[in-house]
Each structure stands twice: as structure tokens, then as C-alpha cells.
Length: 216
Image (cartoon, rainbow, N blue to C red; front, side, top):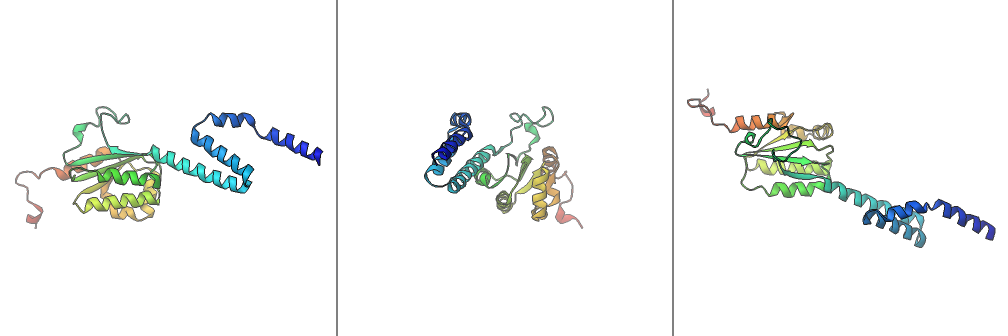
């Protein structure tokens, strides 16, 4: 037994990967905290409990970091590096139109931020364009947040347009049936097309043109 104990001690020491242990301690405190918590639970309680707790902590930290990558803000043509100069400028946004750019994965970790930003709208716009070019992923909670905001804006006679949707969010909207509620006429390949349609809707009719009530 003493010989076997010695062999096990040497094997455990060789498997401990001490250089990785030291390296992780130099990383962000959250990563080091997960490792130390898992290590402590392994010694004090049980390996199964330690792995379970460590996995839950790692998932929580990952989701928190991912939600921090998502940003919702009013589009500023002068500050957005992805917009080509000369093709999209502040003058392209007509009065009564607000363009919001959503950047990052739109999942439950970012749904609250989206609701808060949209809830801070000042004067009620006539048209709100949601630019989704930088949204690679949309989940069910993000879809519910999007639906809630759209329905709330529509109650104030505000038209919602979606621009530059990536394949996964578009597939999610179509499979959920939400695309039928939005309407194909409110979905555009890029932000400029949506702005042109918004300008057309808000432009006053030409002088002498009959109003819809006057049409036969």
C-alpha cells in the first residue's frame, strides 16, 4: 500500500499540469475564480460536484461576457466605420425617422438592453429602422423582445422596418411566423433602401394630387 500510494502521488503530481495552473492564476479574476472553486470543491467535496459547479460558473461568466458584446444605439453615420463615406450620410435620415443599429448576438442576455434603449425614445418617430447587419444570432427571448417593442411602437402609429438581416435571424423570424406579422414590405436588403422607402412614405404628396379618399 505505501508503494502504491507513492506511485499515485507521483502520477497525480505529473498530471497536475502545474504550469497551466500558474498561468490561469495570471488570467482574469473570474477565470481564476472558477478554477480555484472547482479545485477546492474537488478536494473538499467530490469531483462530480466540482465539475458541475465549475461548468455552471463558466457558462454564467460566458453569457455575461456575450451580453456585454451586444450594443444597441442610434446609428450615427459619422461615427460608424462600416459605412462608406459619401454613400450614407446624416442627411439621408429624414425627419421623423430613427435608425437603430443592433450589434452582436441578440439573445436573452441582450434582450433587456434592447428594451431599455427602445424605451428611451424621446419624441415618437414616424418610422423606426432596425439595422441588423451585425446580428449573427437571434434566440427565442430576443425574438420576444423584438416582437414586444414592435407591437408597442405600432400602437403609436409608428412603422417598423428591418434592414440587412443575416441568414440565422431571418430563418428564425420566418420559422416563428413573425415575418408575416412584420410584412415583407418592411424588410430591406440594406439600410439605404429602407431610408428611401421611409422618405417616400413621409414625403408630402405633389400639389394637386388626389388624396386616397378622393380616389374612385
